[in-house]
Length: 133
Image 1 (cartoon, rainbow, N blue to C red):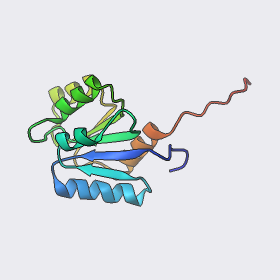
Image 2: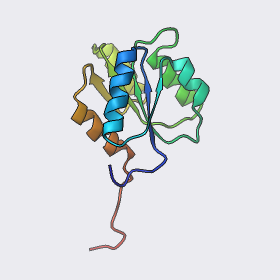
Image 3: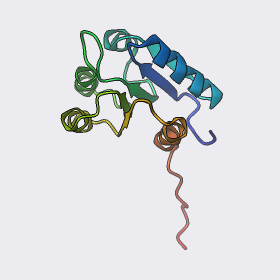
Image 4: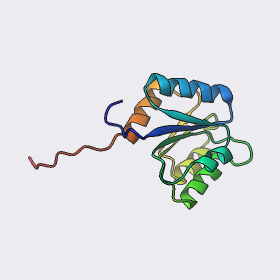
């Protein structure tokens, strides 16, 4: 995916091992580096404000939920674009995720191409022509 920052990583936080493996394979097939985490706590132990990329986040996680992880990232001023991918797709879950800053919300199972297009859109810097026409 051309024009994306070279240091950008797709962080995958999901407690389902098969989902993490599948998303990781998808990222690899698209040439995107990824890091996998089985819990919000594991991710929070690794992430800092210097990291670039985006976060693929499940809402239903043990102990610390996806919503709580979003709130903690906001509190720590860690500005990673969040894409929620969840089997829970009720209005309250979706609204809360978006209110906490999620940029997109996909219901599982997610369409691979739609997800890759979204990641590309989030991670590609906007190029503007500096000269007026």
